[in-house]
Image (cartoon, rainbow, N blue to C red):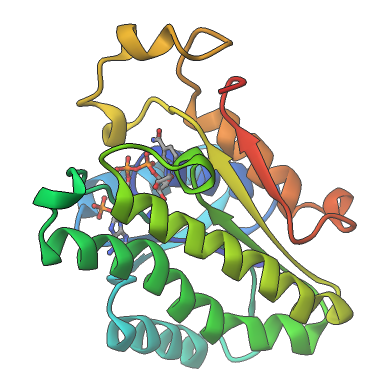
Length: 241
Ligand code: NAP
């Protein structure tokens, strides 16, 4: 029977690498994206070129209406199927010092990074619980564990996802569904393009930014049967930061 995984924000960066990793593990991957169709197509082409399979799924995770419409339409086209692995990866930064932070900077980050994760997980967890098989993997950040200056919105959203992860893990454990988070440090993607890598490398014990593929390796492991006894955890992948 075909197994399905959904990766939010699969068009670029960490989400693209996770999509490729899960496809290589045999999942049919729904590659979600918000607007960058060209990059999303590239992700799908990479998957297919490597012998895997998937499909594009365009919706804004921050819109409850778009999330439910997309999932309902998919469910109608795939009546017997369910999404067994959900990777909540879509995320944005809108950094500012708190006294300058606008309402939009606060709400945009909350809506995408925290509320989006809630809409998707609420919609899909029931199928995993019914089937007694499933994985929810949330991509958080070191910023949500330790806090980061200029990121009160982002740190708060990611810390919210961490609390959600721990609580849902307790709810879902009886049905053998695991819920974990991975917390990257600095990873080389579009999101960190504006940062001064040379300066930041000096504070990273391993002396470099991580790669999206390294994060994807960890997510792939958490999605696998070998990780069946890990739940409610936040695993850092940060070069020792
Ligand atoms: P990225 O390269 O900027 O890619 C962001 C992805 O999220 C894109 O696929 C984008 O889709 C999608 N996205 C953004 N808003 C969305 C929305 N409302 N609905 C659906 N998709 C949306 O980011 P990244 O570096 O790969 O980051 C991925 C995750 O890792 C994020 O949660 C981020 O907070 C976390 N993280 C990153 C780092 C790092 O150093 N890079 C460190 C810690 C944590 P479009 O292509 O359509 O815009």
